[in-house]
Length: 118
Image (tube, rainbow, N blue to C red; front, side):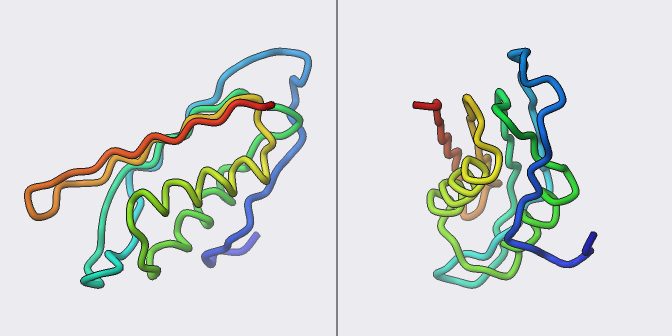
């Protein structure tokens, strides 16, 4: 597997598709750039999901999150982009993504995105 940033997530078959269970993933070193100033924004991305047919391989998630490091995104946008891609690749029954972005200029931001399978 590559050790370079990637926009691909690696879905692998859910080893327990007959069981309803929950996975929580926390990535406390997420970085992206402010689209206005170009300065780095730091945060924690937490993904909580109930798998459908797939789970996401964690190294691929790490490389995927790394791909945002040199891109400019507002917190609301990047949180929704990550959620959309996770849903596309993992096809979860339920997913909640919380982006907790560190204080900058006296303001911190939390963005919560929720998805439930139709």
